[in-house]
Amino acid sequence: MPPPAPAAAPAPKPIAIAATSPPTADFTRPEEVAALRHALNVTKHRDTVVLATLGLARVYVHTAAFLAVGGSVVTGVLAEDGAGRALPISTIRIPVEADSLFKLAVTLGTPWCGRPPATQSNTEIAAVLMATPATEFGIFPLALGGRVIALLAVHAATTTLSPAIRDALEG
Image 1 (cartoon, one colour):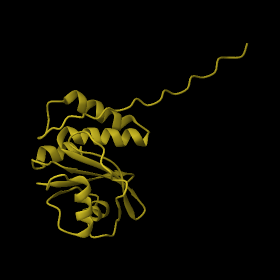
Image 2 (tube, rainbow, N blue to C red; image 1 turned 120 degrees about the horizontal axis):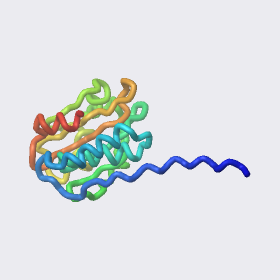
Image 3 (cartoon, helix red, strand yellow; image 1 turned 90 degrees about the horizontal axis):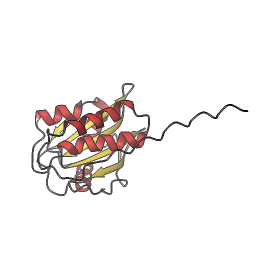
Image 4 (cartoon, one colour; image 1 turned 120 degrees about the vertical axis):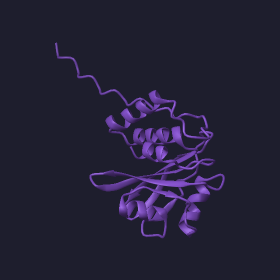
């Protein structure tokens, strides 16, 4: 008899993104945060990284978007608003060199938070990500091997991005 075939690796479990709309940071969901952080630490699948990153951000903010950095362009991948609805961001394609918040985050590799300066690129970003004028907007770079490969863009709608929220999203 031939030996049994090796078992296939199990498919990654989908990460659920909360569909609730926290108007302020919700620091009362430690189990959800721990599960999302664990998924980010162990996954090798891009889709799981995107969903876990957005899920983690939405614990603390109203709107979150995941954008890929490829070569000299930042491209929209997936975003969710406060009601858990997907936002149409696949049309976002902004050159890294454009006068935008993305340029700062990609070239410096450091987060940026505040009211976005009024530039053409920032106006495009705000139009897609914000249903209401932002009190604060944040761009958090995600690096791999010292190179920024993605950006997490967030906006809190009715709150500011407090130091606690910033720390949670940077961690």
